Image (cartoon, rainbow, N blue to C red; front, side, top):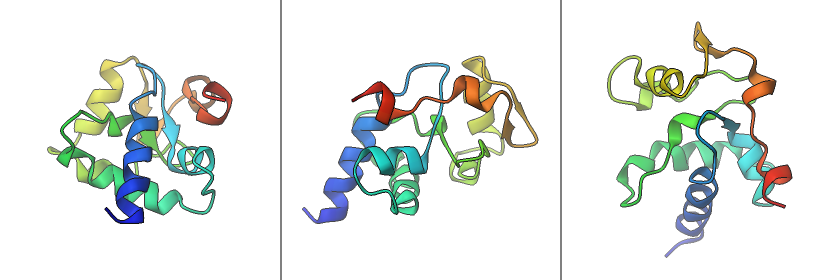
Length: 111
């Protein structure tokens, strides 16, 4: 297993802890894992998350501004947004509304 595989597994472990109705960012997960400059690697992990045996709620991971930057990796044009909206999160023009209120910071919640 390569280092990136291990990192991806750690990313998935954190993503699985994001509560229903909450979101976090690629950077927040990277920072929590002690790899603050690895937000892009977290994004790559999310892109690969559909290949995992245990489900990963990748729809709950967005960019630092609350934009659904990974939505093109979901089947269907609006699946990411639909999944978020089904959890009560409002999305307008690919932007999560009240982002600060629904943001879950693993550094604060898991430490």
